[in-house]
Length: 271
Image (cartoon, rainbow, N blue to C red; front, side):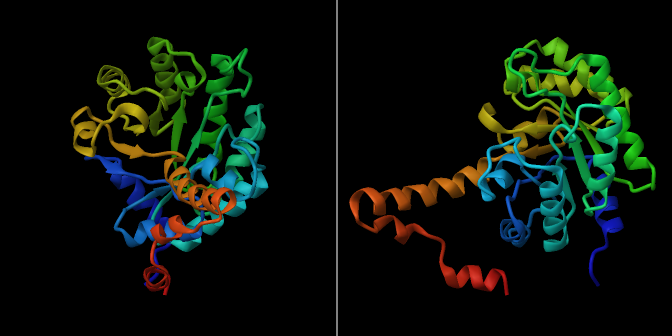
């Protein structure tokens, strides 16, 4: 029997109760299916990885494009999908809420909202507004009792705001505002990770593995509940593509093509 959206959401929520799991980030339906084939239990979209597939830079896609993409991801797999919903594609809380309601209808099991403005001079939304945006997302998720898991993200470290106390204060405020899971992409030392986990306990923490160098077990030992890789898988795919394409363009040779994944194996996987 097919796995229903309600099933996926219930499974995803249960996964956040204990242990630590990897939630890799596919960039299209094919990569999502491949990750399911490899045995992962949940997936997360990547704003950057998706944007590059439609020839756009990260944070330049529309809510229409993202909702279409999320619908395709959710339909491609029997796994829960967590949506990188950027900043809700709006500033005002009411508009964030309206867009989140659209996101919920794509079939996602989880959804995250960021607090970055995109303005390097003022990189984070004012704290009160950031909290109201999380509250609006919470109301939209709860309006039809969807059971979608809400992640509150503080983007400070990605934008050069590396005051850990500020980041933790925001994460705690997002938790109080209704976030089920907390996320501070860019933190990487054991001390930073442990401090965030402790501060928001018992709520689960997502870790962008990035430059931390930690293994799944090491992250679990610090109390992390889930590990995502952001656009790293997409960059890895682009790395192979660009290396082979450059060789052809610059040298007129084709050696890198031999490193491609076997077409027969791909056909079997997608059969």
